[in-house]
Image (cartoon, rainbow, N blue to C red; front, side, top):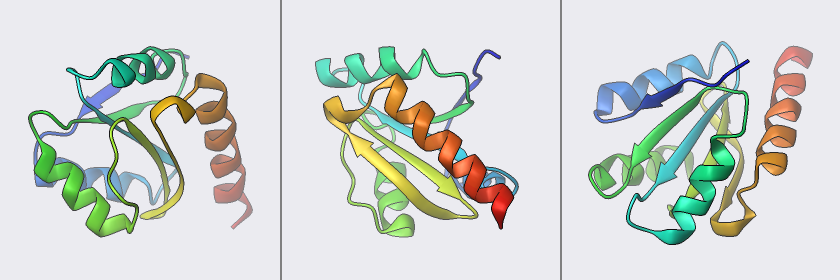
Length: 116
């Protein structure tokens, strides 16, 4: 299954991300297109099979800050946050973002979601 990327550019789209995480786990990626470490993380994220919501922090930093406030997860960039039912259940930043780590955490979040 190929992933679909959803740009998050408005507060309403961020709200939709939170709402979607109620039905099944979701992945949000804070990405800075001008950062070499973020470019590495972006390449890793392109390899995962799950859908990804992406905030371009260079152009919508206010949304990344809203995300941090709503989840309680300190903003970093690059950063991946996996959400279940509106709650952050996993996050990694910088070089800790790997395809394997995200795939494993997403699978665990899916398992957790079906167990509840």
